[in-house]
Image 1: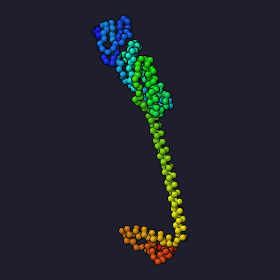
Image 2: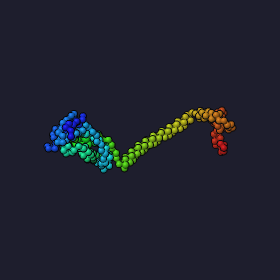
Image 3: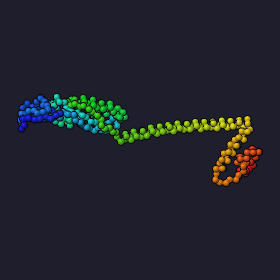
Image 4: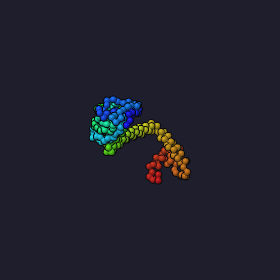
Length: 264
């Protein structure tokens, strides 16, 4: 039996007396004295320690959610005697798992599944407030509460994925419709341009007969360029190819069109 005991840094001790029971005195860090056999010291670690819990709960819209909570806790140094009398040395193992489980489920049940993601800070704050209130009844202080894990059932995850795919398909369909409308407008504009061009050409022919001669010269230039760039030898009627730009080429061209089999 020893008459002295040492309390390490970050610890406190309470004393049990065989005659009077638990003494109300707290023993701080350093060397302390006790009566051998009659008194027994019990040392508590009052430093902050973590506690992790993962639980399965149901949301407000009846979706199963797996939530992980981490709590930083320590005992109230001034209430160590009460803690030893009612909870013992392993107070955290006795109360924290059940409190964290119940508080997490109670808070998760207030929110829908999507709100658990969009309002995660509010969910964490509600869990902390509930845990601080409940743990205070057992003289346990909580310094921080955080959500470390949040996942949904596979069915809900697949439903969310299908919803995202449907939204992407809707956006894609919208762009397709816009593209079709633009293509339609382009076709209409092109048709209007061609109609106006044909009208202008008709007016030009009526006002100036030399307009057709000018167009024939342009066509002959294009045909001559294509034929000259070809590696093959071609023997064709110059009148048919619009290459005869002198004399009565217009009359010959019109007659060649009227004769059957001329182009064969």
